[in-house]
Length: 171
Image 1 (tube, one colour):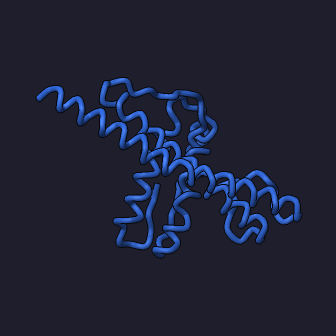
Image 2 (cartoon, rainbow, N blue to C red):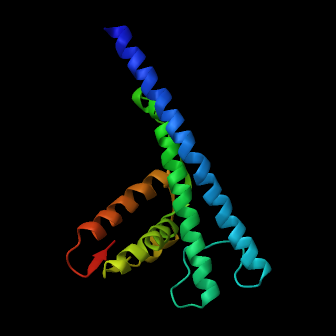
Image 3 (tube, rainbow, N blue to C red):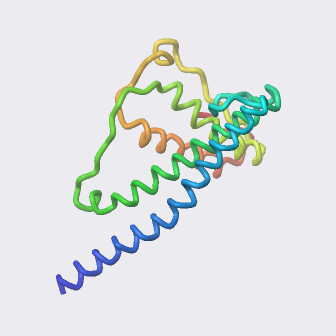
């Protein structure tokens, strides 16, 4: 019975690796496509080649495209990070979850999360508001796994938008 359980676990991990590889290939193509579009627009003088998530809506067509490309780039990166998490499922099962801690600015992370969810909130008719941080906190560098912390905050915002019945969601 124990050997059957081990075999099932091995096969499950093998299947997960295969599926994740099959998803990763087109995801990488999307990431390259975003970079290619940004570079082409830069050559045409329409938009700078480095996407940004903090572009405000209505700032100009080039800036709007620039902001959208930044949001897409971060979304694809986030999906890739999720794939990496699934691929490391065996390590998690074995209690070897690795955190990648480094300094990050809370304000930048919150701006990125807000930009990622701006369109879905707008589509649902919800005003998404990220309140300004107190001055010391807005300049503070935190130390932690910003990807996992940002993922948690992003999930909170996504759920706030999904389950909100009134016309605003606050973060």
